[in-house]
Length: 430
Ligand SMILES: Cc1cc2nc3c(=O)[nH]c(=O)nc-3n(C[C@H](O)[C@H](O)[C@H](O)COP(=O)(O)OP(=O)(O)OC[C@H]3O[C@@H](n4cnc5c(N)ncnc54)[C@H](O)[C@@H]3O)c2cc1C
Image (cartoon, rainbow, N blue to C red):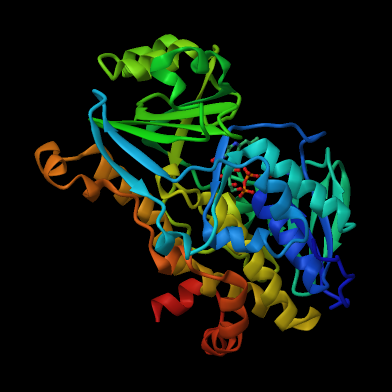
């Protein structure tokens, strides 16, 4: 475990709104670069919320910069040698093995969102970052010289505000000047996480939880069901993406009865039925929302930036939402360091230009993977089952966001200099 050094101050004051993975990564990376950081989070206390979440190699390398974090994550993450593909009826298609060349892209961390979040949160506290829970930001403001927020009736000011306040972002309304309404994606996900003891007792399901972790996907028409065991088979989780035309109600607290999932999975592999039998009531039903790409992520005075889901929600089939949120944090910390307190607007404009097209390309992988699985031509799939493989592309997974910002910051500022508003859309429109 490396030592934690106190960084030299850059004099840049940063307020981060939201202590999810975007906010905490931005806070930790800004602290590491020497900026002074205040985090305001609306939750009154930390709770182990959520279930399975994935961090691909492009964000794993950010965790690995934080002394002691990899060692802690190592104890709680899913470990398997590949992903087993099956048809909805249980026919084995193939196994996508995590080969040496795929592992060369780096390690992934898949585990319980609440447990991983707690480790990252504790790390931020250990660094001495000022995190204030129970602070719901109600308003944002900015001028040419500063930016700030109002929370619990108190005004907080800084050089820059990073709005990492998730899919229902208030910061987004401030940045855009209008409320961006999410659209239903037409899909929702049943989700569950539970102790695997029941599954271990039944010979039909014991193979998924005995002798290490397993990762299995069943694919049917416009539905897929992914199951994974975690912590050497001790815990078990599954997610089932299905068609849904209900009103948008995106919340981790939204509950569904198992009966709904039985209906969607009627006629599926008996093993899937047994997994459902062993699952405690109720399920989470997470409605997936869709947003058209925002025209910009930064405010008119270039003092407030949206990061993470506030700027760009992801479909889970991209397996990149949390990773891209972390990349945002790593990138903006470098940009602010390069800019210093006198050129914060340049840092924000560069952040947006450095990130925008990459994020869009990453978002599209979620759409293409879902189409590949949900609209499969089964005659073709049986001839070439590997065609269903998750893409493991170096441009996405091999990326080092901080290094990229280090290397391209100067040219990005130069490219932006000839545009009066200096926001990405001006460059794109040129
Ligand atoms: C409780 C919870 C559980 C989740 N569980 C899962 C999961 O199991 N699997 C999965 O893949 N993804 C899950 N997600 C989503 C996932 O964490 C994100 O998609 C991804 O990590 C990007 O993170 P983010 O920091 O941009 O957004 P989020 O993780 O949504 O974080 C946003 C943070 O901002 C805070 N916030 C919002 N508004 C305000 C305000 N006005 N003032 C102050 N703070 C505010 C929120 O309380 C939250 O902590 C969950 C998110 C949350 C909030």
